[in-house]
Structures are given as structure tokens and as C-alpha cells.
Image 1 (cartoon, rainbow, N blue to C red):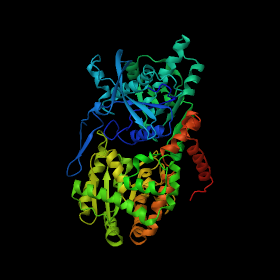
Image 2: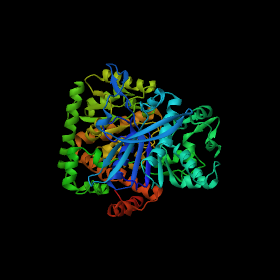
Image 3: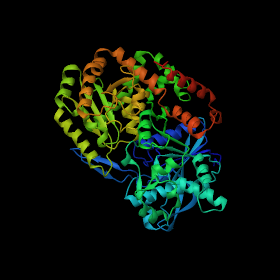
Image 4: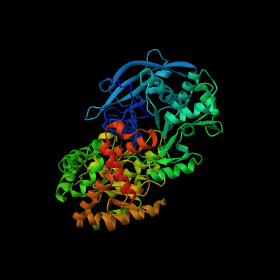
Length: 586
């Protein structure tokens, strides 16, 4: 057991393995990529999350796109190892035992980052408490608050019980874990033999805590009625730290994390601006998300990189040398990945997808603001583009939250559009979007489509995965794409920045297809391959979790890169950051 971990990373969900279904989407995938890069970089980090014995859910879609949810059946002891360690938290006045299962994320160099999954399904617990680690994001407000007690308070206590006594920074990946600040305050007070909270206590805890917010809308931040908080947690003096934490009769988890963190960041520059406006009394910095390069690069593309860019896994910024990959080699690697996807789509749907047809991909959570059906705003115009300029086929995937009826309706809209288009444009919606399918889609379509309503896309990472594989984005200017879009070089923008009028965005989308994307794909293959190459060299080399973690180390964790033994990569990173700031990368 590594008891020298200096950073504890707590997240409601962490996608450590495609076969461990304890994640719902982007937040968990980001957390998993973060842990994988931490192992690669030998960062002394330990991660804590909740076990979801019933997973998120298995999605089924009927003939008209109606979604139903099923329990995910998986054998946790095939992947996780019991620690045999137990800690305890108090929920609703009762002592609840918490145990932990361990998953080791190990780099190719042999460095391991442990991930602990907290579990309350123990015989000594009452039946209602045994169920608290059964379903990810399940139940009502009481269930959700109880889960956050387990993650935040229980997470700190479990780390102590496991012997992780050298932790200097606690990183809250979204507000779900913010109750850890209350536990740290309790520890500080008890060491001093006091019950009251002092300014010095707050200062000590703030120095230890880091908070990353992912949600650009007020309604998306967890807040609980004070009566419920008292029922679940008992009376808490911490609510009186500032009026912002507990006001209007609620405990706001985001404000709790903001008040007790020395460093706060959004997950893209635009998202930081939005968050700064939402939380004006706090300083909100920006560290743009990334993805774990070695995880998301397809086998054919990885083999190509191995030939042209030795050491790209260890130094992701060296992917800038993709500018030297020969046209034919890059195209053949992409076609290899594409054929795998086309075969899969046709086996699943009998849709008659063709490897020679321009394939657009859209994969993310099905919810209204993602506007997945935007491309079908004018069915006849879309049909004309495919008939007169160049053939199109489109593949969709994504789950709607079980209680998100508008999100479920979007899936049905896509099914209806597919029916109306008939044989003119093949449209497929693949069920049960998860890590395997995400990797296949992002690496093998020709263009990655993204159409959120600004500024609702905090960051987004699927387009970053696509870029690593030479797949350019056609995207609304929101989230990371504001930073990654070089028009006609790394992809194409839909609309203007901060433009969110539905019809205007749809018109811009059709115009880009008509004037740029489709003609280039069919009539200027050399030009299209050059866009693919720049997607890798400019965006793939930068929007990765290796770069992201270096920023956290320097800005938030205050750990020297020399601690990780990766000084060479760090020097290349800092040089690249300076060049990018000067506009030298093109």
C-alpha cells in the first residue's frame, strides 16, 4: 500500500475500466483519464469514489426510440479487490459502516495509483443504508445527500483508515465531494481540543482543498434544504461559516467547496468566465480538460504514431510531429478504424453504412441543451446536401437520464428523422453508449459533430478524443472548442461565439456542410487529410490529461514536476505553453 500519496482525488464517479459500470458519462470518463495520467506521470495520487453495485443503467431503445432502463449486472469481485478495511459515518442518527474495494491503475512503467470504491452493502447496516451504494445518481434528495456524506466524510475517514496520512491536497471533482471540507474542519478542531470553528481552522482547511466545478448553470449545483441536512447530518455549525453556504434555507454544496478551497477552477476558459460571473465573490481560474491519449487513440492510429512519433505516450506534446505523417499513411490508418465501425454499425442495425461515404458522428448524453437533433432542423435541405453535393451518413449514441423526459424525447426525434430520410441518408442511433462504443465512434467517423446551446457546454471531451485520431470537429463555439478551433485547419465552427439561436445555428451548420466539409471530403482529399493532420498536431497534442495534470500540479497542488520524475516532458510542456501563448503554433 502506498501511504505516501500527496493528493487525494474524490469524484462521485470514476471510469477505471469499461467493464466496471460505475460511471454515467463525461464526469466519470474525465476522472478515469485523470487517474490514468497520474499513474503515467508518477504523481503521488490516490482516488476515492462510490461503488455502484447496480451500475448506472443499461439502455434499450425500441423501434421508435423509446428508452427503457435496466439494471447493469456485473461481478465486482472480478475487477475489484476487497480491502477488508471499515470506517464509519453517521447518517440520520445511525452509525453506517463503510468498506472499500480497490482497483489499481498501473502505468506501463509500473507506477500504481489506487482507486477506492466505497461500499455500504454490509450485513451490519440497516437495509436502507445498504442500498446507498447501489445506484449511481439514483433515488431522491435524501438518498443523494446520504451518498455525498459517504463520499465526502466517509472518503476522508476511509483514507485515514487505509493509512494515507501524507495527503496535502484534497481535490473535489465537482461539488458531490464537498462534505470532505466539514470532515477536515472536524479533524483540525479535535486536534486542538475545541468544538468551535476559528479563522485559523478555515485557513488550514482551505490550504488543503482544491475544487473543480463542471456545471455552468445555477440549477445544476446540488443544494439541500436545511431541515433535510439536519435530518441526515445532524446539526452542523459549519453552515454558519458564510451566508453563501447556507442561505434561503438550503446548504449549497458548490458554495461550501468554494468557501473552503484555496484554488477553484472551471474546465475551459469560457466556462471559467461563466463560473466567475456566477460566483463573483470567489476567484475562478481555468484549467481546460483533456483526455488520456493512450486510452483513446485507436489501434491503427497508435501503430501509425509508433512509426512516426516514438515516445508519444510518454510525451503527448510530441504529437505535434504528426505534421510529418504522410498523407496516404494517415488516410489508411483512419480507413482501417472506420471499417471496424462501419462493420459494427451494419451488424447492429442493418443500416447499409458505406465506408466510402462521409460519416458524421454524435455521441454524448441525450439532454435538451446538447441539441442532438439540430442537424434535422431542415430535413429537405439536409437531403439536398447529401443528394447534390456528396453523400452523408450519421451515427448517434447517448443515454438520457432515467428522469429526463425531454432528453428521451430528443432520441425519439432522431428516430423519426431517420425514418423521414429513408434511403437518402442513413441515420443510426446506437444504444447503450459506454466507453468501448465511445472509443469506436470518436476514432472512426470522418467528422465529429457537436451542437450544444452556449454557454451550456462546460468543456466537452469527446471532440478531444476525436482530434487525437485525426477526426476534425464541426462544432458550435462553446466549451473547449473555442480554444481548439482553427477554422478550416483543425475543423469548422458552427455559428458565432455566444450565438445560441437555434435556427441560426442550424443554418450555419448546413452552410458549413455545403461550402466546406462535404466538398473538401469528396473533391479535395489532400486538403481534408491536412485538416486531419492538424487536428492531431494542434489539438491532440494539447488537449490531453497529461497537459491538464501539469497545470493542476503547478497551479493547484503546488507540487514540483520533479516529484513525478517527468522533468523532460515538463520542460517540453512549458515551452509549448509559452509558444501557444505567443501564437507560434500553427
